[in-house]
Image (cartoon, rainbow, N blue to C red; front, side, top):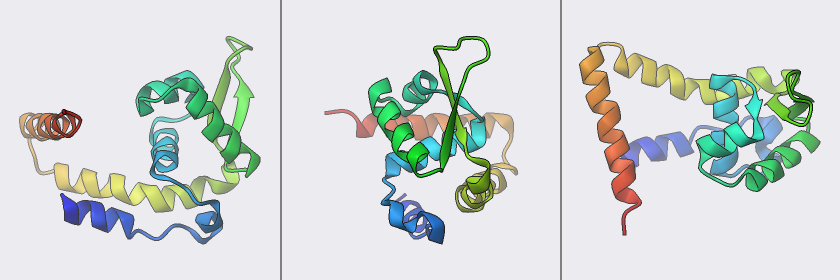
Length: 132
């Protein structure tokens, strides 16, 4: 596990994002938007397991820098939908998409049951890390 984390941390940040001082929470937010598509602040907050106000601050910061864009939800004008801005989508995909491709390659030879065991094991590990 430490080797995997170390390798992920060594993935070079695209030059256009190096001055932004992105924290791990920003990367998680960008990964959700990249892989799962546009979503509301509340949906992002639930996935990131943080308060909606925290996500609003991150989205505001990245929107001001042009990385994210916000638009009104067509079904509920009070709600904002957040997405990656088109000019940055390819750079973010090239950067964060590598990890998804590596997971697909690693999990491809496994049966559905083996994948389930692996995912359940990772979830149990994560839960154990949070125990006191």
